[in-house]
Image (tube, rainbow, N blue to C red; front, top):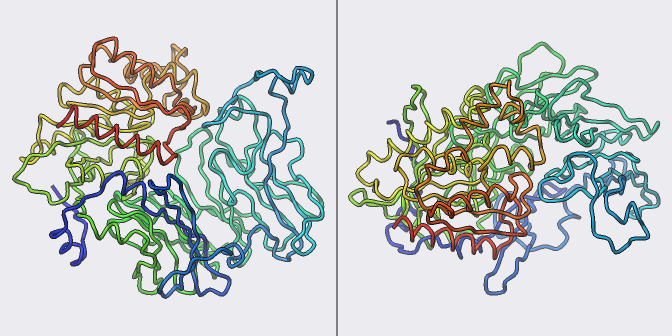
Amino acid sequence: MKKITTTLSIFTLFFAAQAQQTMTPEMLIQLGKVSGDGTTKDGKSVIYSVRQYSIADRKSVKKQFLIPINGGQPTEISNGAELVPDNRISPDGKHSISSNDVKVKKVSGKDFYPELNKSDVMIYDDLNYRHWDTWEDGAFGHVFLNTLSGKKITDSIDIMPNEPHDCPQKPSGGDEDFIWGPDSKSIVYVTKKKFGKAYALSTNTDLYSYSLETGKTTNLTEGMNGYDMKPAYSSTGALAWLSMKTDGYESDKNDIFVLSGSSKINLTKDWDGTVNDYRWSDDGKKIFFTAATEGTVQLFEVDYPGLTAKIPVVKQITKGNFDIHGMCGQVGKTLILERTDMNHAVEIYTLDLTGGETKQLTHVNDKTYNSIVLPKVEGRYITATDGQKMLVWIIYPPNFDPAKKYPTLLYCQGGPQSPLTQFYSYRWNFQLMASNGYIVVAPNRRGMPGHGVKWNEQISRDYGGQNMKDYLIAIDELSKEPFVDKKRIGCVGASYGGYSVYFLAGIHEKRFKTFIAHDGIFDWRSMYGTTEEMWFVNQDLGGAYWEQDNAAAQKSYNQFNPVNFVKKWDTPILIIQGGKDYRVPIEQGLGAFQAAQLQGIKSKLLYFPNENHWVLRDENALVWHYEYYKWLKETLN
């Protein structure tokens, strides 16, 4: 087996040998959560924010800091918004743009019957009646053009009047969904101009340009049928955006397009990967972007050749066992990045574009990490059942002793087509799992970006197929190691990882002693009838469960449906479910818990009535961790 091992500094190795303390849930929850806000107008400093929760005070506080790009002590500030360029204001300073909710459709009983103002009822006659964690109320986010007199708004115009469409896109769109044209004469914005069933069945967002002079709107991506998003102009006036080709396929290859005149150029067409995020270089001659590769997220660059026939060149800039989490700005030959790995939460780094050297700029959580023993993280390539090489991340407990035997967890990633990289989660935290004495086995199974487009796409309509074999071969191979206690192996995961847990519970043949599933799919028929983004289930399952002559769909609903194997369940299982998760609705968790209970299987339901697909509240997160490790102690130790 080929191995890739993280390199630790001499100081860290020394400290790890001396210290005895390890990561705890309390430490994890109280870490500073760092986010880069941008560079100052004078190009000398970086602005960043830190959100930190205090268990003693039972509250979270967010502060903003300024630090010179060449390093030094950070300074807390209160006027960060004034120090960075305001991209909401037009380049000529005469206007600004904003987004506000506008009531467009009648939905509530009070909308239809104003005299019944004490009624509490919602009335729907079409789909997309709820999304992510919110019920449709008839209000939509619209872009507004504001006229300025100094800093005061004197007039405001809705440039999407009466449209039942959103900008920013829900649930996760932001300021990047609407931008100024470089001449201050246009606004480019992203929306999906579909409503009802058409909205629920399609991923076809487009870029629209609104002219301030004529008031007319033009579709810039007409005929491009998948996701088109994140428009950005270069310093020379070229418009770039991210685009997926296929309508209804939310995990399609994500490419960088540039519009110059009437020509659309795909800069990453021939590159075998999918783009996470991007930004123009200051000179407009290239684009920096992040993408998963071999179990990490790295920084790449691609040349922008203009309208020439030159084939764009993609070059990887950073390498190492870490993730480039985001890009915060560029100053000359220095790029400002957010970086993380499985042992460290996000911090701000600088990258020298000349030599490729990275340097840590912020040190928000150094005190915590320097006080604990860090787990060892290792990457192994194993041979899957079909002969393909598969990367598996292994995280060992601090002060790991190969002469001992350790309980081991197979971690199942969500998505399903999301990368398993050097991320640092505040829930599924490998550092914390290892610090509690568990070896973590995290395979880059089929369906994950970073190993080529073919590898990523294989999982569609094969949910219970090759990727389940990938999971089982990974744990089987690691179980051959003398330090893995074969009698104490668990399986854990969330979302698609939760589905994987439910499915493996019916086919694992005594491999696992315990299971933990968070917001997982238990019954595909129920899922199809209650989830909100129908394009996802149509693409990944092949269609509706009532399509009896649809072979792909019938295979998904029968061979790959965990509920069909529940009679074979024989292992303790902890089920976690969010009450406001409308992507994987509550029926999934309740159905699985009820099935386990009625069959006499040791089981527990951890229900968060006000959480969605994630656990976002700090005290809820602590309960999550306490119950997670309590369950493992009861069933695996």
